[in-house]
Length: 166
Image (cartoon, rainbow, N blue to C red; front, side, top):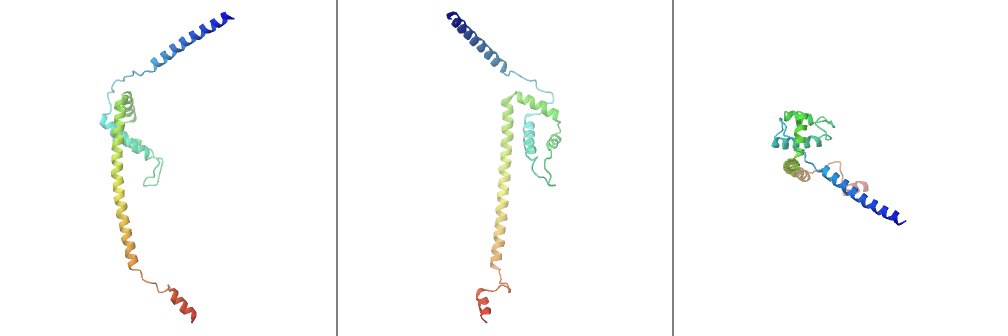
């Protein structure tokens, strides 16, 4: 019985050593030392920022109705045409920038900041437009209130009582 307990404890010790070894191998294999070479047709960083910014707009506009009241239109091809690139060139540039995560994150943050600036500008324009519209409506309502004339068909309560009494 004693020998069985010793064998079990030795087996547990060996299992711990093997599990530590496997964990170490797993962690070493997970490190990303992937450094990609810069592609020949790499999209420049500032153009990539603008491209990603336009792609964000295009992807969010997919479910918004356009002038023809159509939805679910794919606008990415228009973005590629605007920048005179194809999807393969974008893909290779995107993979390269993704391998340099700090640079990629900076590109996305710049694109997001630009979109937020544009949103603020358009929000200010809409606020001004709404305030002008409300001011115009209030002026029209005020003019209507001042120019209201009693209709000859509408009778006052006093007139109605007098006519009923006769």
